[in-house]
Image (cartoon, rainbow, N blue to C red; front, side, top):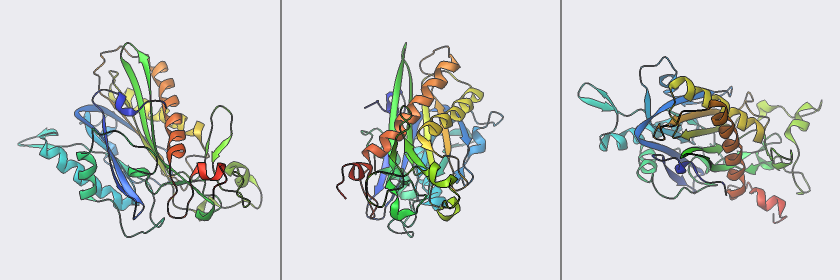
Length: 325
C-alpha cells in the first residue's frame, strides 16, 4: 500500500456508493479551503466551475472537489456538497452569504447496470457528510461503475475503480492523489509495461494491448465505446499560488499517461484537479513536487484496478489473472 490522499493534513474524503445501480460519487473535502488548479485533457469532459480555478479567476480557494459517476447528470451531486458546506458555515463570503466553491468532474458509467439512476444532491450531501471516515478503494464512490480496457466493447472490459496513494517528501511535506479510473485504454505497470487490466482475450488468459489493437489496419474504432473518462484530485500541504496549482494539475496527466495507455482519447474526458492547503509552510521545489505528483497518480491508478471487484458482469483484474471466471 502507498498511503492515501488524506495523509495530507486538512484533506478528507467521503464516498456515496450505489452497488445496486452501479454508480456513485466521491467528495474531496478541504474545510479550510485550498488553492486550486485544474487541467482538462480529454476530448469528452463533463465539468463544473473549472474556470474558477484558472490563475486569473477571482476566487483563490476551493472547499471541495466532486468526482462523480452518472455522466453529465452526476454534476447535480455538487449541489448536495454545497448544501453540506453551507450547513457548516463554509464558503466564499459574498455579501451576507457564504458560497461554497465546489468544482467537479464526471465519468460515464450509465448502463453498466442501469442508465436511469445517477448521483444527485442527496448522494453528494451524503458523501460530504461521510468525509473523514477511512478511505475505501476499488468499486466504491465514483469508481463504483467504472470499467477499463473497452477497445473490444464492454463485454471484454475489466472492472475499474477508485484508488489513492501518497508520498512523504520530508520536513512534513506530503503529496497525495485519488483517481477514479474509467479509461478506454489499459492500465499498465509503468515499470515493466505489462498490461494489468485491458481488453480480455477470448480464451480468458490475460489481456490484449489496446495500443496494439488500435494500430492494426482492422483494429476497433474508439468511437464505438463512448463510456469512459479518468478523473482525479492531487493534494499537497505545500504553499502554492494558483499558477503552481494549475501546473501540478497538468503534471498529474503525466502520471495518467504512465499508467493508462492510451489516455486523452476522443472518447475520454480526462480531468485532474489540484489542491494546495499551504499548511506545511514549505518553500516549494516544483520539480520535486511534480515528480511526486506523477508517482502518486500512477500508483493510485494501479491501486484502483487492484482493489476493484466485479460488477454488472464485468470481472475484476484479479479474477482474470487468477483464472477464476
